[in-house]
Length: 324
Ligand code: UT7
Image 1: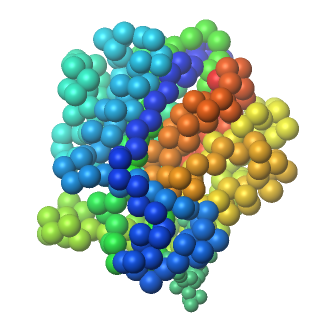
Image 2 (image 1 turned 180 degrees about the horizontal axis):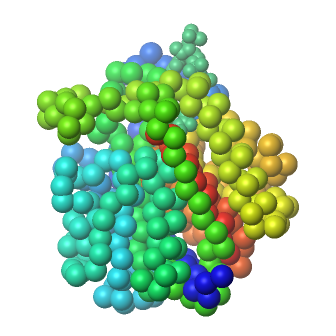
């Protein structure tokens, strides 16, 4: 086993100022606060302002993570942005954030694994660190998902929101990240997707009509089963059982999914970090955003054993088990 581990030494997050409540959505689509809360647990979401881009959200979260880590930003030698909603087709949002931070020279790239993007990014960071290829990584999950939502489609528009979360992960001789694993199965493409893009239908992108489509109840079933299975496998692989976990930080898509995972793992809901009510589903941002909120309000403490798990379009999924 490597004697190098990735250890989280700083976190940050950022939400756009504008909060859209369920009551506000009641005025624009055929829905009710009651339905949204009962079916998803979501009460509100933040929406980026016109002219506010994914890199702006990412930059704010990154600056806070750097500050909380205490490192000098020039010590960062790898920047990864997990996003489904990059500012531009290219260059990557990671290079745009790099410039906003006043950095240059270190590796910077985006990871696209939709709602599992942050877990994918952490998996990559940990492997860079274990192979002694990086000492201080900045990893950000950031989305302006509102830009790929059809605001007249009640089956999707009530669910998603914008935001960003970031972490500084440092190489250390003590864990840190015990293990991480990522998976995908492209056979499920059409259950959750934006059915147009650069190579297939640039005109849809240009006209702002590239929107998320989801077969919600099928995705729900897969999300519950896949996230429960990966949690159980991760624990088995590390010779641990669920009772040894202090916290689970799951992807924040739906409170009912989080409850079902807790039940399958025989974990009390008190051990699940839940922020979906305030943020909605922020895709790649949801895990680091929830993590940052929970550590700032004192729930996550140094030494806690924490399981992160993500699930998203593709399907993509993965987990990270760590000591904080
Ligand atoms: O981030 C990646 C992972 N994403 C997810 O995990 C999301 C997974 N899916 C879900 O969270 C849930 O499936 C939803 C919240 C999307 C939907 O909840 P559901 O309990 O699966 O409801 P449903 O899709 O089966 O729809 C039930 C009814 C339908 O009406 P009928 O056909 O029974 O008459 C829908 O048309 O609710 C209707 N409906 C709505 N009603 C009021 C759908 N959206 C709305 C709405 N307001 N916004």
